[in-house]
Length: 351
Image (cartoon, rainbow, N blue to C red; front, side, top):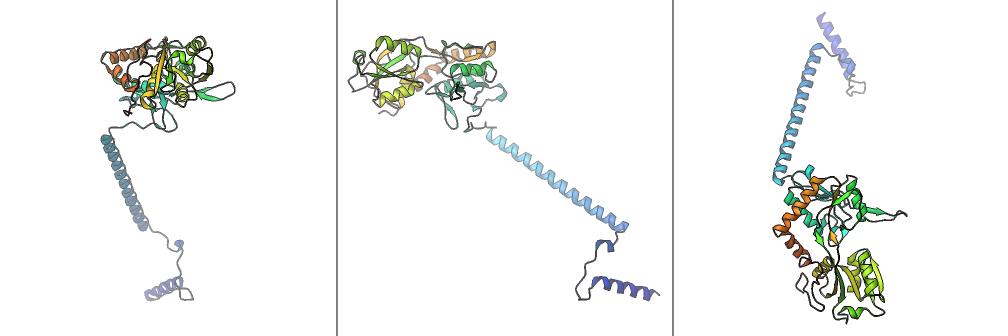
């Protein structure tokens, strides 16, 4: 009987494993029911595989954390570089939450302007020094824009910058704002730069004094400013006046000899001569009450005191004068001509 049963099982296996054509026939899973022993073995294998996978994942996680810590230590947690799209970026603070956020139109060369990756200018560097003195970082927000009634977008006006500060979008406003500007919701810091106006001509063109540009047919390129307009109306009544929003554009007009004279604020003229055109001369200085200052939201006495104290410290230790000299050649003095007509000045390259 045992031999007959064994023969039957062999016959059944042979029938299922081989097809009439002689090829192997793969049996379906249900032809091989799992026993309790086989199920237990499978569970043990599954559990072991899961444990190995979990251990590998934990090892990867630990290695990643260790690598990040090493990079952080090597780089000193360097601040992210400013972005090309002009979004909030600037000087890194030791404590980013304590940084002074600055609003500016970033379009007033040589005071504040934006490059593709950074902010540059005299005021920008002065703010960096203020940050160092006060132990605060300086972070510029996206450049402030102005939208007129026809939805045309141009660089922000002082009142646009002040509005950002008053609304709490920035702690400080710095955009060639003067203490004479009528601004709402903000208060002025102590002045950080005085600016008289310079009446300029180009050397070797025959216009070497004020009298030489008071005749008919003289074109005067001027920086847009009510005080300049009033002076020109009184002293150069025969001149054809061309007004520019940016003082640098007025200087370029004179340099190209499309104008015989230009009038801009003195620090801007000094910087232009230093780096671009040494052959411009001041034939007259117009004394003004123009003082540049920062603005903070009304009521923020702590930040106002921080800025004013830092400014005073920078003046006291000579850092302010060094900065002025590096940007303008000399600290501008109220009501005095920088140099006499016809006096040559070397630019930054010694030419």
